[in-house]
Picture 1 (tube, rainbow, N blue to C red):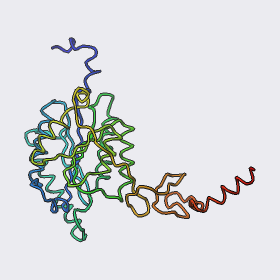
Picture 2: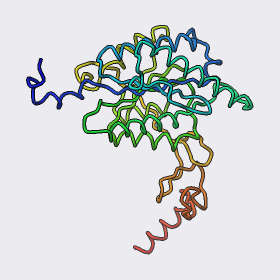
Picture 3: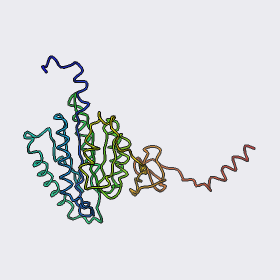
Picture 4: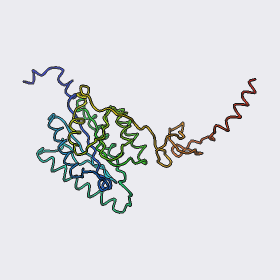
Length: 297
């Protein structure tokens, strides 16, 4: 087809099936050393590489960016648009991944961590959103972005505020956050992220078939998702983490000025400095109600 024969609405439908996929992979060394499944880190990376190749083969205009989420740091390790020789994309990713893992492990040698530890998910989400904003500002025509979190580490309560800010930023930019949980426990943070941003949350039952889960569920572009029957969340844990002790709570106290959450009553908000009144219990409020009733009579 010659250039003058291109239909007038070609550029209107161009972005629909072209994707910018931001892949966040969990490289927390404490998590991978404590995992008790048949999925090793090398097998995990092999499945991810095959999945990335399938994304790039679906459409030659697709773009893939990979961000490594470590224990102490996070960094870009792959960008398909920056490669001059596409035949060496696997070697480039593996080389930068190895350099990042060595650097992250050297930073946490002095840390004593019990269990799998927490990965820096808030940092990698922020980096993904910054990259997407750069693409948005590059021009009116750009691929449709989405974020895929391949996560296994437990939720870090200390990152609650930063992660929720990233979630609401993605919602405002209409960027779905997909989540594939490879750990033993569900992630309440990523459940909320996928629910709020209209993404997909999935915890594979058999990690040996991780590549099949990735290709059948997360390889489809946003335009094609409306025609497919994709997994829906069974339940979402909407519990929040308190700002004082970073614990997940069912009931607590909320600052009416900045909406900070506390598990116990405080005289002053540690976030905005607002002074709180005295907390009234049910017993202390009973005489007030009786006194008001007697006055009305």
